[in-house]
Image 1 (cartoon, rainbow, N blue to C red):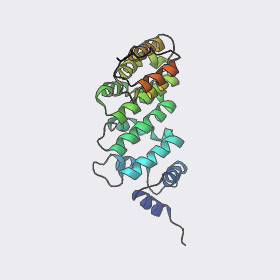
Image 2 (image 1 turned 45 degrees about the horizontal axis):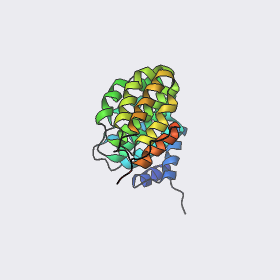
Image 3 (image 1 turned 135 degrees about the vertical axis):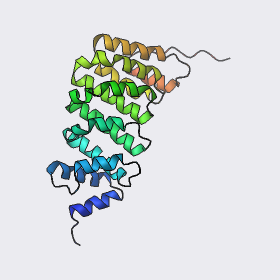
Image 4 (image 1 turned 180 degrees about the horizontal axis):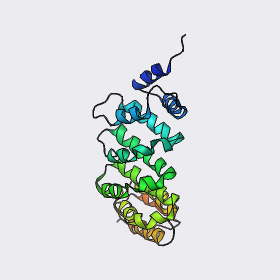
Length: 219
């Protein structure tokens, strides 16, 4: 059987790249042997009705796992498309930005005001990406904690029940001192909320190391 060329591999991925194919294509970008340039993948991702967008999303997500530094010229574009109505585009941006915040925090922080303004009304995928990006910035440098505490408080106060445990487990370990105390206080205030499912409240309480109040007897 004849071996496929890199161009053939790119075309096959366009029809629906597997994770292994996406990783292979990302490795080709890193090594400089890719038949498709990084800029082409990025443009494919954000085309309004581009058929190649799903494959581009997988390749860029794989690249973010192995060599996120290559994506730094495209930070602003990734932020802009976080709220894309196309799920694969929003998910790609949400996965790439936290990795970029770890390796290029200062460059990601240039978009901080835009990201903070987007948080309240962003779709769930984008919100999760923003929260994890903010956490990555705080891990990279404690100087971001005070700038981000208001966003963390908002996220924890308004998180849907299914979002809350994961966000608590990401946010609190990234904070220290007063920002930690403020964020923890918001979480503890939510635990008695009857709208918060008991199993969710219990998971959060276990993480915090506190006991839940017993449920009132129902007659």
